[in-house]
Image (cartoon, rainbow, N blue to C red; front, side, top):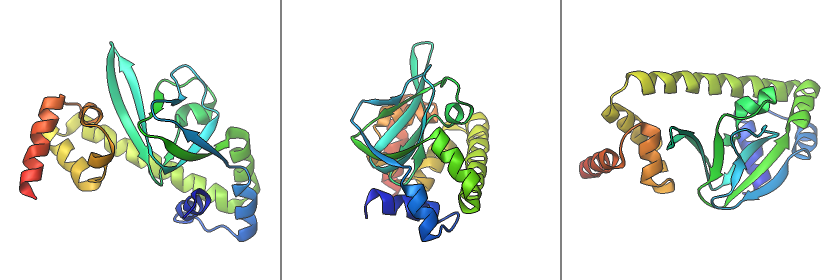
Length: 194
């Protein structure tokens, strides 16, 4: 499946598009390969694009008191970007960097807003996508604030086991708020269960 088919399949999980709507909408998306270690955006820049990851892995992170803190990952079939910066067109508070060569499609802010205005099906997709993003952020806040390290590890392992093959351990440990040593110990324990 090519990147555009992949994008359409992802969008149509939330809202059906006619062939005419898809033709118009897909013409606004452009291919971009983000090379390994390249940034799609850095803190302080304004996000101009909304991305769809066809293949590869992107990592969102911040530097707090000289400590690199992973805040999220995007990989095959995910949407990505500094979404808050994209929506309010203000400078981003965090960075997004490719962990692998990453094939993406991207659409500019003005084009996406115009498509939302023009097509009810796309506005519906945007509304449902935003709702899912907010729900995910709320769940992540609860997880970070109230789950033990073991519970956070178990939850990630059960919900996204494939991420353990895609993302280096140090970044997963950072995302889960634990030391690499604690992460390694928990991973060994988990592998012993299988």
